[in-house]
Picture (cartoon, helix red, strand yellow):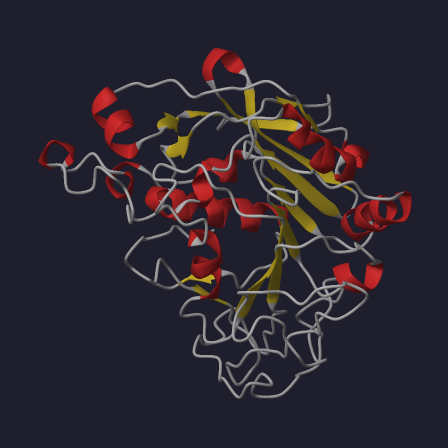
Length: 350
């Protein structure tokens, strides 16, 4: 299933720089990420280097795949690869628990990108060392638990928390955090531990979005998150070209005074909070519904064939691909070549 495609314009020859090694002291091998999961190669351009001055790294990645997206950003333009780690268990309570895969995001990141961007899945507990974190530009935190709904929920030692904070604040890493995977409020403890340095924290409550039109809510099997803050210039692009995304039973977010609230759910509860922290950025989202296949293209939606739901399905109502583009681009603004090149779900590039 091709949901959209992600491309990065790179060197003078219009080819991608090699991806950095995803080695280190992580005790497991990433699964489901790109071709065969983990990547090899050592020629990636580190985040801290200005792409305009970085040396050329060759014409192909180690797998021999040539970059198909031309370099269009100026004479001699070069771009680092966008390497994403999705850490945690996938959710299991989508619109169709028996057939609502939590793979839409990863497929979107890895499909039709000519090897220019990869998402590595780490569904088992990994040790967050500087060596593990270094290859990645963006980390997405899913359900940090042995089992997403029931736990046990992971904990991290002081050295891991410090390494994670350093990767964001001093190395320029971008973090997207999701929650709402479990009925047990203790699910928030693990992500709260990792992002405590930002002052952002999840609460143990349950929150919902309002339903403005039951024709959509019933057919999408979720209420649309619709209350976007578009006036704050720091976070305005998070809702760029987004009207609705599906939302169902998430956790509210406490925002410190120097953070930015980008969306609210029913009753004004904070549903999307971003903060610039040192050289990096942290973005906390209150739910996980945007990871389910039904909320991207409708695949697996139990109402997909209901004639009364025509033109009222998630693929008609929601801009899930655009929202994910906005979030990734916001937490990693140096990913200047991050492109969506598939017209099936048109995305505004900014």
